Amino acid sequence: MDLLILGGAGQVGTELQAVSWPAGTRIHAPGRAELDVTDAAAVAAVLAGRPYAAVVNTAAYTAVDKAEGEVAEAWRLNALAPAILAAETARLAIPLVHVSTDYVFDGSGEGAYEPDDPIDPRSVYGASKAAGELAVRTANPRHAIVRTAWVVSPHRGNFVKTMLRLAAERDALTVVDDQHGCPTSAADLAAALSTIALRLAGDEVAPTGTFHCVNGGDTTWCGFAQAIVAGSVRRGGRNVPVTGIPTSAYPTPARRPANSRLSTRSLEAAYGLTMRPWQDALADILDRLVGPVSDPMEKDHR
Image (cartoon, rainbow, N blue to C red; front, side):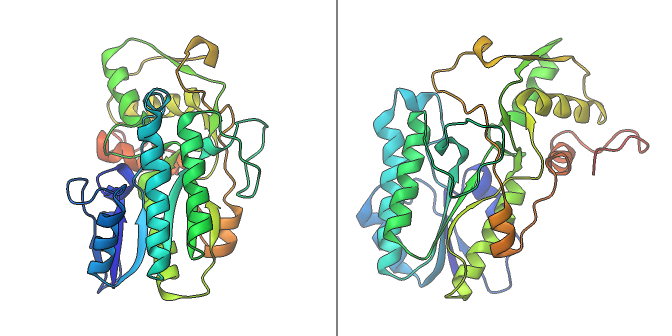
């Protein structure tokens, strides 16, 4: 069985290639130099080259602030590319798993968003991702749109790696404390995406639609940073104070959702996937980035 992964160089794409796939599964992850996902002819040629059982699209323009000034590029990668993929996979009867984001919501309210809650993006990035969702939803009936948030891993640039670097360089950190969300391990997300892709590939009546996939529990960026620093300290890292500040004290070109909480209930119901707490996922990432806990009597939350 052949599976196509797009965006293989990113955090999630890297972890997808590290998944323990069933024997006989062949993973193909062409890089940008090999495949321009915004080129319809190139996409058609790649998909025609093998009998792909499913396509997992993690490719995206993710520079949230830069998108405010690079509108066309953001829409090209986040809206046009999914439209091309959805149309071509539908023509070939290939199921498509497409990764999206919490930024499609306006960030209001206190509870966790359900997949069918109304969307109302407030940034170029969010709007372009919402358009990509619509393209997939309307073009290929055998799709799974998987929204996620606050993705971290040992790979590429992300919040965990940034906090570890700053904690090593500075004597104190200030981090936004009024934005709430669900940290998500790229490895855990990749495992869920692989389960969905395999099910869609092997079962014509597998659940389709939109789902949310984040690790269990929620926190603020400040709370997340405090957990990162504390976990690093248990592994021999520097102990620096982390103080919360309001969003107004840290202005950015793109508006961040104050509420990025996502409910995974539909994912559990459709695919039987229960996501572990974000603290456990963070501990695994810190083990890889920093090393094991120094004192065996000091354990992370697991």
